[in-house]
Length: 237
Length: 225
Image (cartoon, rainbow over all chains, first blue to last red; front, side):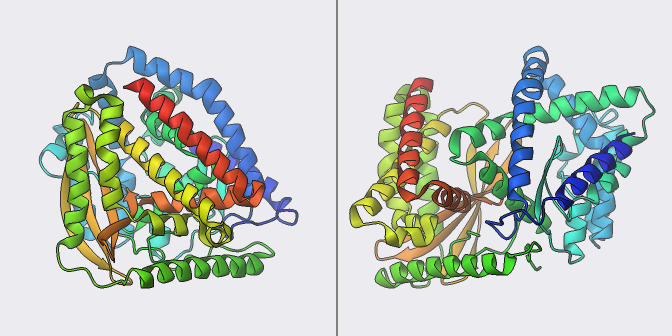
């Protein structure tokens, strides 16, 4: 069900964009659909301020920090096969096998993933996904795209939406538990993003541009495993 | 790894305009660098500059509550003036728009950047909760006789945050021109936003918006202690 919903959202957006290309005035070459993206950003921001943020605040208010940590660890572990699979697809065999070990250790000694036991024994958490794999395989990101509900993306990251969902164990949990667990996961994720969203809104003159640039740079940082080459003479794009 | 983003019609013209802006910025930086004589930094010099900043932030963290916001601000402002090259930062942040400002506007913009940095550092580094601490990892050479100092901010309650500092030599010694937190460049964020505001509203409006933002930040930070 999660896969079908994600494909549906991506497909609807692409249909909408196909009518926009001829009327868009590109101001940045990596954001030729800026007008569309700004509208989607405004939609997502309004939805977040009026719905997701209050729910996340309520979740934080009633859930103690150790419990929230356990929730994050549980869902992070369920999704960790995505990292393992993509490490192997990128040819990082040793790291991939280590991450497979991390998943097994947290699933067993970590009580089904509730405890991040592996980090305590120097098996650090990595973060890989299909978008990073496509980048390693040589694909350029293509235009930036802000999707409704899903937020920042690029054209390259779109195939990763169903690919990463397919390697997330939560996807294969049968309904209606899928919806309930998925909802809890989304709320926890939103709660964890709260300080970043507040920073964006407090520090920026143009929150859309701030988010776009921060997303693209963060993705580049992940693709190069934390050591990207500097852009320009001062490290700026 | 290529980074060819443009696929839409008109992208070639946009790319040329962007290349002109980038070349203009590079020339501005090089002109500023020529005036301050860019040399290769001796080993460890860039790290010492960054650790001067970290030591000051660590003192603010340790004494944060006792000092209050004004105390932390008074402590960090002179250190930032010593550690950062705000002249170069201002030139890169505005790109070719910087050269179109008169001298008083350039001075006003630089002063706003310095003030904004000081307020941000004084507000964000103020509490010893979860024992935040800075760890220096390595120095790496970068293009144009610059050095990247790789560091990490560790806390007891979460994953460490990578902080990379781009440092170059100036007549006053090594100075930081950019900070990247988890790969996100503060200078890039400013540059992209300022370019968007200038395109939409003009450079005078940008200066007014930055001034308003700095005033609000000062008020909010003072209120949070």
